[in-house]
Amino acid sequence: MSQSATSTSGSRLARIWRHWRSTQSKGRRAFPPETLDAIAKAIASGEQRHRSEVRLIVEHGMPFDALWAGMGIRERAIALFAEYGIWDTEDNCGVLIYVNLAEHQIEIVTDRNVGRKIDNIVWKRVCATMTQGFALGQFHAATLAALAQVNSLLVEHFPAQGARANELPDRPIML
View: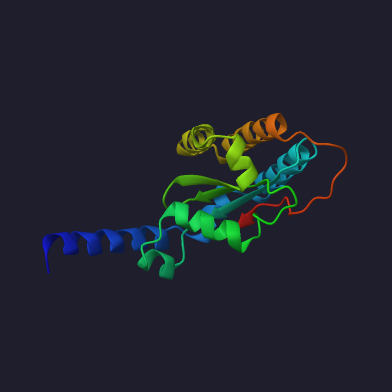
């Protein structure tokens, strides 16, 4: 076995170990019920002011098969975007905020209409708000601050035009 093959399999095993050690209880401590309630309220409130649908998915660690296949955080977020039907909104304005606790990373995946109007650099700033707050253990405050940023962006580009149906649940998904 070559040196690069050894280091690749070693880093894959280290990554699998990191995800395995990141338990659901860690996720529940970072996002207790009162935080999940506050997030759902922030999403619902924002969706009254814009035409987009926002979902937040928190995953303590990726599934083994995804890790073994070498799936990255971005690919996982895109897979969840599809799995939870975030792409299937009337105005094609779905936004997924994906938090991976094992990797300490956040990804934002947007539907085509949102992607046309808001640049990825802007979304990276929203992710930075969360990662900086998470590094300090401020999961509640950092998530709400990021949602405020997201809602402001969406209000600017996709303002509400009267009453509309809520197409996706507002409650965060804990995996």
